[in-house]
Image (cartoon, rainbow, N blue to C red; front, side, top):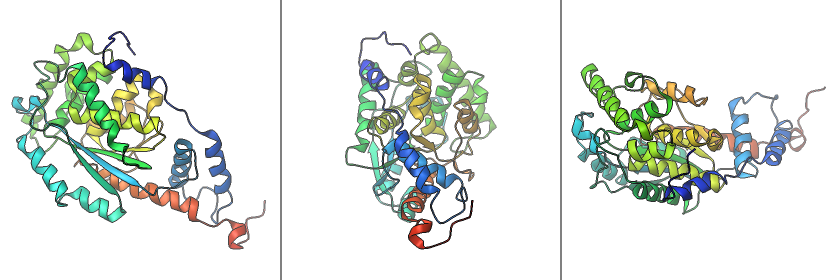
Length: 340
């Protein structure tokens, strides 16, 4: 990763170079206790892996008592190119809907007893059109990442990240193209409901944007500021803060994964504390996950965003923690263990 700017990104680069590693001792203790729980070894499958993952990145016995879904909302100048069938005003309207409890994410948070915070990222001030100029200057991008880091300020032990932003599937696709290569058509999909002509338009805009910035895309942070958006930058910061504070992170779908991809490009190990919630029905999401060698927990045909997939996955993470920490051992339950 480049470190030549001497500008606001230097603090981000320094943080990336100081990320805490896994707590293998805590993970080993979980594995040892798991072998004594009242079940056949391995019978809870992925739930057992999640319990170990929680211990690895928190350094303690698995528990989730303060889960938080953080939704970051931003607007994008590229929408003037016609890349979304919905107007940009819908972003603010949906933020209001979240606040009033009327969205899908509100219902899923209720179902799984999850906290919810919504962050409005200057919706009245869209980023610049990436097909014509850089989305943000470095100072704005770094400051927005720092704002995203504050998502954990109130205290949480499981952070789920999601987003809202008309036009942001175009932004995510541009980031994937810049990071992973290929053709624009490889990374575009219907988003909020485009027909084939609309998808072709998105591909054209993305191709022009990446071509415009091509001489500056070897640095992942430059990819973020030139092709990203405020909600992408904030989610990138939130993921980074989670790692720095040993808070496991659950990443939502197509757009949220683009924020994670920035960190993966900087340091593939920077996402080891992340669980990828689901495989979005947005066609290129699985391609992006494969490029990072990440496996999604769920595949429900969803493509809404809003953190909905992450919130559903959080329910499973909570169950995994409770199964490990609340389940009795054979000795505690006076149940005969298998004979070896």
